[in-house]
Length: 258
Image 1 (cartoon, rainbow, N blue to C red):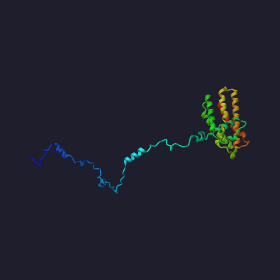
Image 2 (image 1 turned 90 degrees about the vertical axis):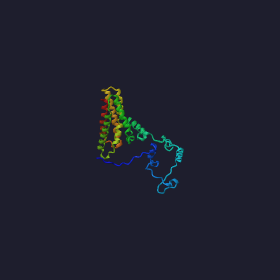
Image 3 (image 1 turned 180 degrees about the horizontal axis):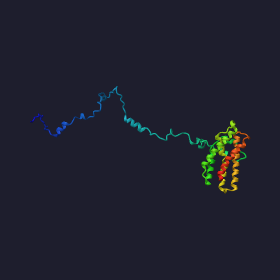
Image 4 (image 1 turned 120 degrees about the vertical axis):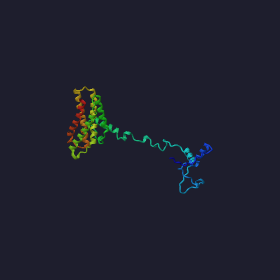
């Protein structure tokens, strides 16, 4: 059983394909992007809209201003400091290292009979550090690597003398640990000389022991006198302080001998 459907007739234009293509092409106004807002009519005439702020930029004026302005220079007079290097203090002075004071203290240690204790009132660690490094260097030339041992023994020795001295004087003791480190370090100068001389002396002989005894007495006398005069302990405790200093410097002499 068949059913008939009524379909509208299809009519082809007689003008050709070009005409059909022209008829299907949308107008040029329809190709414009839809996101652009319509331009107001008063903007064409030059009138400003009070509701919308408008800023105008003159590109020619901006280009002219940038072309005439000089480029910034890193070496202008405003960036270069006016003060010269001659006005600045030396580097050692900024670090708190007084070479003249170190030299005076060293010369005072070299004279065990006359020791100027006033020079050692202000303690410093620059001179003792130089002496300890020199002592370790001479030991290294002798084939002994004792840098850590030397620094550790000096630290323990300074703390030992500080403890003994303040136990003897009690509340009257005015020796601080910093000055005690400084005094022990400067009194190591005879031990440094002994370590340097031992490089040219045969080991195990009486000459080595005799030199060791001489330099130990030198260091003990200087250290005892400085501790007694700086801390004002008097003569009643000088023997005990000398015995403690003797023990300390005997250890360093044995380090050189053996």
